[in-house]
Length: 434
Image 1 (cartoon, rainbow, N blue to C red):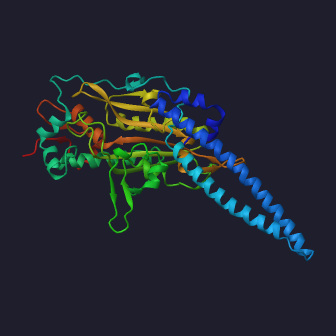
Image 2: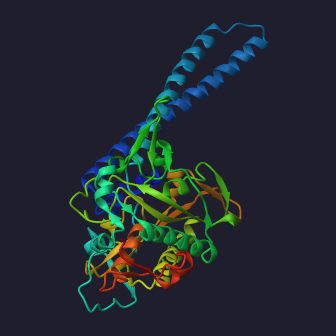
Image 3: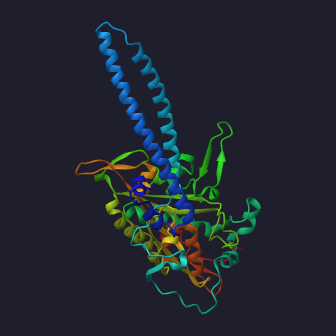
């Protein structure tokens, strides 16, 4: 969430910075409403403080009169009137504060000045590449054809059980999914210094609000309502939500930062607005698995932590010998909460292009302010808001897609990457089910 002081100091500069991050007109209107309400609230606040000062003076005068054995009926009447007025104004201030907070929560984060200009992912800037795409002696097939030919990727039965955009994986392919998740967790905890957590897969609306999912992404979320209490709980779209909310409302010490967390969870997304896009296979499903990376740091170290997070995601692909490239996201593709971010894109020979497999972002103090996560500086001074970061380390389903396409053979089998050998119980190749 943006600091309202930024709007007070130079609202036009904020509006210009956010122009390519969404609906520029709506952002400008929201900023205008916030400033109008903020001005009104500050006037009411000043009036309230003046009345409280008057009430205090009257109270002192009444006390002096009583000590002299005198009555002060006029002052008593006036003090009651002032007290009633103050009570009403305090309620008004609370309501105006809530309205301003709600509007601030609808404003996206400011992009860092170093972020490339642009309006869509077509304007993202390539930073580096790793690996050379394999030259196939045959036409490589997309993952859904490879998986179906193996008899291990079953979209039809999944659609009957639930609806489209769900999957059933059989036998060794299911084990491959589990192996990938365990491999990623081991790598991030043993070598990259993350602490593994097991977290709830359903969270409250307040948690969704604190982590920037609400109100912006309401249409993309699955939710359930408790029959007995009528309370709404949301299925997490990523483990970023519960991991980032772990320290909501807490005061951390700078010496304990950065905090590095990882978790493997199913993720649930309605993918509203993406129908007709990536409909085949498991590249974009309503339910998918992911190993998530989250960091809580100081704003001063956030960009260093972002770069290392991208390296952590890259290492997974390098160990699996999967070619990839890294692009820096432009302003228009940056996302609601991010101030700076990168996408790691894996090479998919079945599609003949690089596709996103990890997205790593720094939210800066925007995330800490929204989640109310603060730290106490080591050298003393006022508490400050933490920076929050998150990234995929990796999306398991998309890693399966990459393995099926990059390791497929002409006979229909799929080799298992060498790094996964210890996790596959001796299975070194996927062969068609009989």
